[in-house]
Image (cartoon, rainbow, N blue to C red; front, side, top):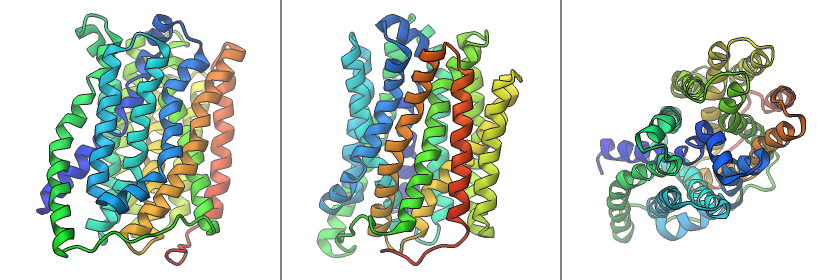
Length: 389
């Protein structure tokens, strides 16, 4: 299989991993009003997929053993496409929650599988491929955030249509991955590539737990910003469209750091410098929002910080392993526990907003989480453990 085709498959799959979550944020107020739901209930629309990503990530290891990474990713893309497309027909809150649940399962499976896929096909180019993988995810998030409100206007004010249209990304990716899965299946049967071996989750490895905790705090911050940045900006008197544009800026600003910081970490090996530096930028952005600095300016450090931390969190478990099977197990564990913890972030922001009627206290809580994240980053340090345990 040609290198270009494999990289294209990686990019197309990665583009699918954020729009089912990020497309909701600019339309959150509209969805709340139309369905008649509270802030904490609305936060479940973004929290539920993240929670699914935590609960179902370990199943990716079993599916990979049975069907290979490629076949399991096909299933993940089908689930994402179905969950997203069903939003066109949403008439009740339970059905809307079900679409988030379905797409969340697909995203949960795809995350560890793509990490294993990178280790399998690019063992000597992990940093570069993680950069491409995470950049494509951010691009998917950025495009969906930026076009959610314009698509709503184009589709006659239909927020349902605006959310459902992102199913086309899965439709584009599926033929590529079906061909890749078929080719990999033939290669396994002919012995050109080895069968997938069993590699248990590293539940007895202390370093794996520290990476899981870091991933969880990182995810709690990232998804809190994804869900509530635009509504928080609207609460300061900005229009829905302006808030959506600022959130788009947040995601666009994160693109360069998402692509290049993994390579810089790999080259200079000073992990603590990059980890803490990105976290401090996040802290700066959150505090800028709370002291009424222009949200256009606050989006810059927020985007750089969040954009840099996410690919590092994806890369660290892969770096700890020696083969694709171990990479899948380590990634499944860190993403499983991490996303379960991360799901609490948007939920807590929604609860604090309902309780206080303001985003100020909620975002100070977010600042506390960032400080806790820095403490964990210092314990992770620059040292890499011996592969696999």
